Length: 276
Image (tube, rainbow, N blue to C red; front, side):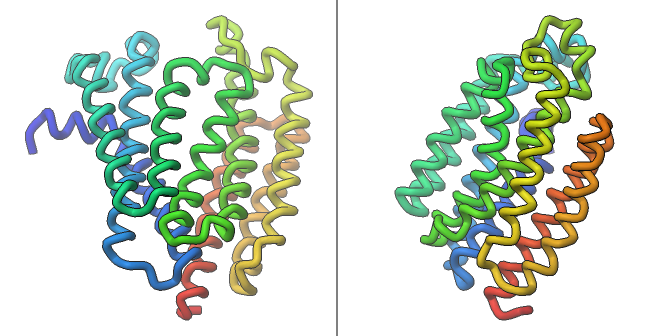
């Protein structure tokens, strides 16, 4: 593998791309227990490419900050030029949208919207109080919506989207609380800086409570209900940490809860296919 190909893959963050593709496939299986294999491949490719494009364009706009904080990344380490990184991200956005176009019109519309939002997030929204958090929450949850669109039933995946959206939003706020001192020193305008740490914590706690309550309303069967309880216990632990003002621990518990919720969604998909 050539060095340039390695750098192209590195700037995409393939691990994140694979996780996003997995979420889309789970959404697809929840919506359609017997999807066409070609549809599954195209859906996974679309999400992988658009997610990778978002990561690449994010590095493009963050290149000056990364030169100080993460000098080993592809652009500040001079292993790829900013212009080439931007061109690579555009290519990936186009590739992902084209793959989605061959799935169906709704999937294509989601891919195009997400591509635009990823670009705007990297350029502007990231430093906008709450708007950046909302964008990340939506983008995380939208992988399930995309999978539902690919399977012809977005409705059933709305629950998955909302759960992922709420949990991610809470985690993003807790991350901002943890980084409060550094962000204030750098002149950033995150939600905790604008409205205060206490109000931000209350908002994050509210999102966690909403996620827990919503998780039991999803009509995904008994096996899912059992599996999602594990995730909810982790979310409850995160809630306790938020109330205590323990942002780093809250983040870890929310991340673990999100992983357990993903497993619960997988259980729902397997149950729908008759394997459970």
